[in-house]
View 1 (cartoon, rainbow, N blue to C red):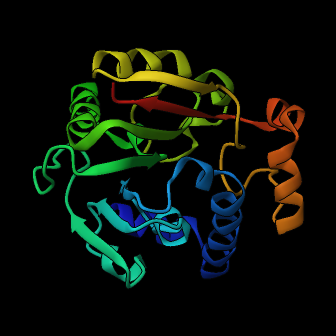
View 2: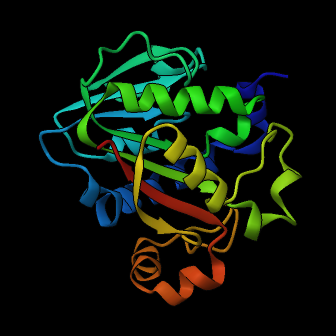
Length: 217
């Protein structure tokens, strides 16, 4: 079964619409602070393109293996169908921000994860940011393997090591940020999501995904 078929089973049409609304708030109230208005942004493993469709920037790029990527991407997004560890279609130092959400647990080999991190560093301009949202095995160990397409476990500590090996300098580490999935207890109403983002105590109680920011020196 391919990833597209799995996602069709995992998320109904109504759930995908709810996810898109949730990501609109996440981008407006949180992620946008890391993305300058004149930036070129790459969404690595873009999936349904919830991030890249809602973030505001000068140029939008989305990479995913799904043949339906163009269907999900907005009209202002340049898409590339291919693996996240092969960014040969992009020139070195041509991107300001790379974003990856719930991507690396789907890889089969850690060597490919490291290659993806190094490729992200290659395409980033000096001082460019790598934004990583990822399930944290330290806090999601009891539900981490509930999804058929999860292959590799990562903690925030392991991912920090991987980023350092790839040549990044981590500058912000939130071991607990969002709940494990959009099916978790994160409130769906925009006003309540905004409250969650503003209350660190709620994130420490409910968060099972890490959020890391690293820069290319």
